[in-house]
Amino acid sequence: MWGDKSVLVRLYGDHTEEFIDRSIENMLFALLSERGFAPTYYGRFKNGRVEAWLDARPLEPEDMGQTEPINYLQMIGRELGIMHIMDIPEDRTPVLWTKIERFEKLAMEIELEDPVKNAALEELNLAGLHQKLQWLKSVLPSNHNLDGEDLLDDLDTDEITKQAVAFASDVVFSHNDLLSGNILHNPDWDRVQIIDYEYGGYNYRGFDFANHFCENCGFELDLALYPSIEKQFAFFKAYMSTAAPKTLAQLEANRESKAFFHALYDVVNRYALASHLFWGYWALVQAAHSKIDFDFFEYAAKRFKAFDVHREFFIGSS
Image (cartoon, rainbow, N blue to C red; front, top):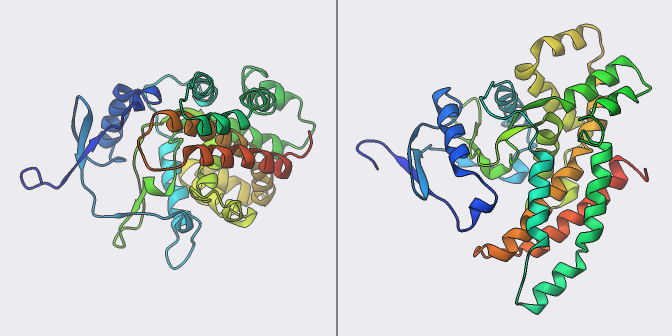
């Protein structure tokens, strides 16, 4: 309690400055709070922040795809749409590749005294992962293809598909870590509350979608829980109802929404591969520094394995 207010005092973890610029995070939190999107921001101190306490529970991974009795899937899509259309005074360069390459560099510099952990690290084959990263940059927007312009120009397809590809490639203010624990709900609310913006920044719309879909699988990374095409379509529709209502209305009026969602599905799920590399490398660095009782090496291995599984499923042998 602080006076008559219930507050949350958030303390930052050890070595998290390797991943997160806390000054930018607090600036974003204060701005989102001012705009009514984030909980009330009361201030910061050297190793933490004070914010409003919300009487709500974090979702579980299995909640995020739920449509009844509470339609969490729809609520999340709508709330993410609201976030994505915000105009935030930050660098609009997509953070995706900068972050992945930063995590990769830190992973390459890891020195471990534990021979078991060293063997686990060697087994992951960082050189091979680097080649996969370079390949991924050729099939997603990056500096390898004029940030996606070449990919769009090379498409020999209909206009609806091109529209969907461009939509997924749009750079928007993204959460970049929309897992279940960062989504709160109270039974008296008609919405969810998205929290924790420490990885927030401008990024490709498709990455924020696919990263959220990956989080449906939980920390066990059960890929059977990855959202079906039907659930993704429902998510896209809910999202566009707040982020792009005019586009959605036009697609529905022209009976083109299903074709658009199909094309969006095809391109968005390629970003799942980027999510796997992002959090796989992140987990390796955590394994070297974190004091949390969690097998980060095992989680990294699961992420890198999921890269291969989703590459085959969503892209094939290209």
